[in-house]
Amino acid sequence: MRASLPKTIYSPQLNHKLSSTIDTPIMTSTIQPSEARIGLVGKPLDELTHPILRNQRHPEKYHQSFAAILLALSSCISCEENKSEDFQTAICLPKAKGAFECPTRYRQNSIGYGPWATTIDWLANKKYLRKVAGGYRGKNHFQGLTSAYAPTEKARLWLREHSDALHPDFLSTKHEPLHLRDNKKRLVDYKDSEHTALLRAQIQRINQANMSHTITLPTTEENRGSFHPAELEAKRIFQEDFESGGRMHYPLQQLSGEKRRQLMIDGEEVIELDFRSHQARMLYHINGTEAPEDCYYHASLPRDIVKGAFLRIMHCKNRQQTIGSLRNMLRETQTRDISAHGLLEDMLDIHPIIRDAASRCLWQNLQYRESSIAVNIMGKFAQHQKACLGVHDSFVVRRRDKGLLNEMMITEYQEIMNGYSPVVSES
Image (cartoon, rainbow, N blue to C red; front, side):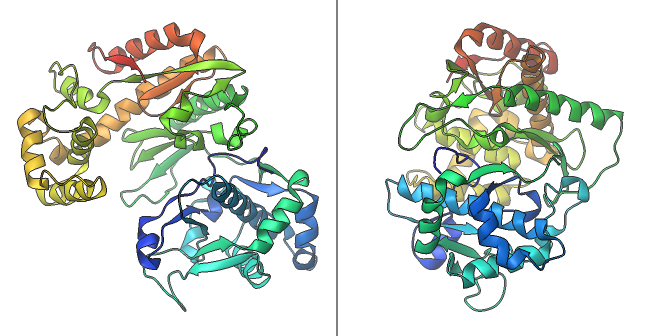
């Protein structure tokens, strides 16, 4: 089973809120039922679900629910088998009707609220799932937490027994690559136009090119087989309109930098190039000013802290929000030798240009320009049917395409940023 499992879809991440609630480190993955793209299918699943499906009017809705949940369970189990630290794993399964309230264009399957809830309850009653924490109501209720379920030993045994007969597959052929969210990050519908058609076609060309290549990691116990095409299938997410945000997102981006550099494209080694101090440099260039060589350099603070602070300041609307965000960052990174107030003042001394950037909501414009540069680079590679895996401000290509990538990164940046030049480096 591990040989065919997607490596980045439903890959568990540390859930700080749930870990704090149950006082145990726990890693979770969340399935948004209406957005579930692939599932684990095969004859064993058909046999398992036969008792519940035989009298249903719409059996495909239940079948897809089972397939999506079993794939997430498999990913949890695979994570447990390869873990180096002591933590639990679980899957978060929304059971509120609001989880299904999204415009039709975004639905990736035919799963409905009733079949989804029935499937979860059936798996729990049959001891394939063990409830870790309650959701928005009922017994063991924790406000603000999605219901979390851990795989049971029965589930582990069943998946292990049938591993050779199960495989991941698309739940349907539907895929909307052009997403629009409102200011509360909810998916909203939009009227199609010539502009949205062009944006959609560009993403589809990129997806087609990347999905036509075989992407692998070196064979180890943890990494087996090639990536599933769904892990390379991107969507572009805009905020409120089609000139704000617009970053590309796909599951493969979850890989660490170390693992990205180990990737193979059609059996060839890769190289990753990135834009150095990308958003900070763009902020200077938008304002018609040359940027420092390294915008995140500070004589006494780690570069990661300066970078994190810069980005958080850019994304906050006022000083109070900024202080709160910086305080959280310092707590998460266990940085104790500077206060949030002190860090903010240091940042404003180094980069006075960011003093009023947040109030002008420049981050949305920055993200739009950043995403446009990235999509144009990936689009040029797609024109040549070459793979180019973008991770916002960095790009992974075959090593022999390094020169082409470097040239495109400089050219596309200059095109979007009014002639200013970036600093490109090898990750």
